[in-house]
Image 1 (tube, rainbow, N blue to C red):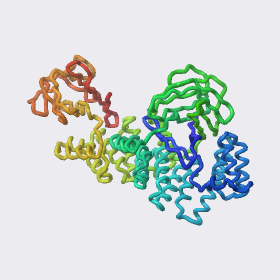
Image 2: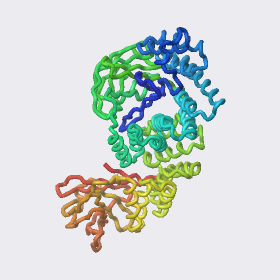
Image 3: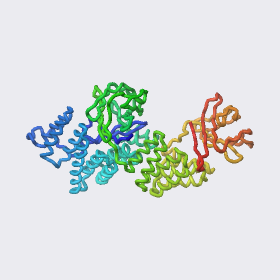
Image 4: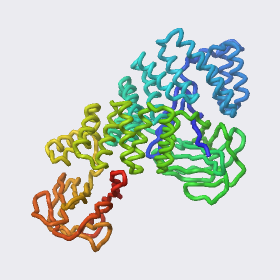
Amino acid sequence: MHERGIHERGRSTAALTGLLRWGDGARFAIVLLALGSLCIPGLAEEENSAENSSDYWLTIAYGLSANGSYEEAIEAYDNAILIDPENGIFWINKANALGRLNRTDEAIEAYQKALDITNNTLKTNPQNCIAWSDKGLLLHNVGNFEEAVRAFDNATDIDPEYEMAWMMKGVIQASELHRYDEAVLAFDGALQANPEDAQAWSLKGDALKESGRQAEAEAAYAKARELEYETMSALSLAITNVVSVGEDEFIEMANDGNEAQIFKGLILTIDGKESVVLPDFALGPGERIRFHLGEDESNETDVYLNGDLSLDDVAGNLTLKDSAGTLDKFAAYWTPEETSEYWIEKGRKLQRTESYEDALNALNNATDIDPQNAMAWLIKANILGPNLGRYNESLDACDKALQINPDDADAWCLKGLILMNLGRPAEESLAAFDGAVELDLQNGFAWYLKGGALQRLGRETEAEAAFAKAEELGFTSPFAGTLAITNISAAGEDELVEISNYLEDAKNLEGWTLVIDEDETRSAVFPEYTLEPAGTVRVHFGEGKDTESDLFMNSEITLNDTATSVTLRDESRMEVSFLGFENLPDGGAMMRRR
């Protein structure tokens, strides 16, 4: 079974690029196969051009492509190329038409020819920012995303006001490389060039949301709405994955719009030859569905077509249309080269599906290929620790990432969290969070983590200042709007839980109950006690004297210091919060919430 590289475009795109919202809670779709930014003669000025000029044949080819006569269009492009073989736009459009006919090798050769022409232009004039942008488009089309970003970097270095180069760089960083923080920086570059570009604000919001910066994302979306940004009214459906070879070949699709949609009468064509009308289906925003080519029983997320269709083992293309003309998608798929970037992306996909051991194997392949790839080590650390509970190995991988790139604030944040889960002294995790803040003073998450470490050290004034800074930067606590169990201490004689109030109002806990290990016979009932907003109370199960922030239940309850859970229920016995932990063989602790 092989995962495929996918390059998807909407056939209606007519100029540089189409930039669309993405699904799974968010996904960028990028359309860079269209005409490119290479200079195109003004066709209106060419109405009286002599027959058999290159512009004449270009006009003919455009018309033939528009009505789906791709074979004839290729002949017209060939005539234009015979007259002007160094015109890159002819080669690009020929490549597009070849792709429509599943002549993939020929299409790649045509794109490469256009790339050679662009490289020759850059040798003559290396300060031509438009040529660098053309090169970026072409590199993307042949699947070389890293080099494509470098080409757009050159374009924006030459002309920092070149908005479209910033936009295309941002979309590739997000859609192909999943570097959302870098995508945000690229969209910021576009907005410096044109602060009134509503689409750039919306795309920036998408990237911020994907990187977990929700408050900043909402601010960007608000700005896009203020500028009257509107998404397309056409059907929004993306081809997100193709799996072939083996017994279960399937095509995955997702609703990449913002509203629930019903898809009726869609026609799927494979490699320009075999077609099938798909059963009608409905998807909410970000929801996915898989169409399997084999036989089995269908359900809401997996539909079996029970037919004789099959996918090419190496490469091919898919076309998805509806009869109303509101949807026309074309996607090429291929088996990608197994680079470190390929294995990183594969690992991320497996991590998202909770296939953690397989994800770890993919990341091991990435670091074997490129031992100096800091991102690969960082993702490996995240899988080993939070996902698999192997925190000592996680710490080693995180340290490796920081050894390669000590200026990565996110890596310092992860290291601090790993140290916390290993039960290391709070001073060690604080040092890591300090490192993150020093590198990125605008990182609200790092400030929030620093506040938590300071709070554990009893440095309340400094903790409050750090939390306030996080809030100022737009970071919202994951506990915002809740009353939650935030810590369990099961070691030593003084066993306790901490409960914090993140609500706007004070809460009287009288009659509330703490239930241990979900065993109702092991529970403690609160006396009258009011927990103020932003307040925390330590609830001790043993004996002692109550204070403003400490309650002693004077019970005989003991916690299991290896694994335990505590449930907080209100006076009506409704569950308010749950926290469990398990000490792991390597010395770490796995926390559980629900």
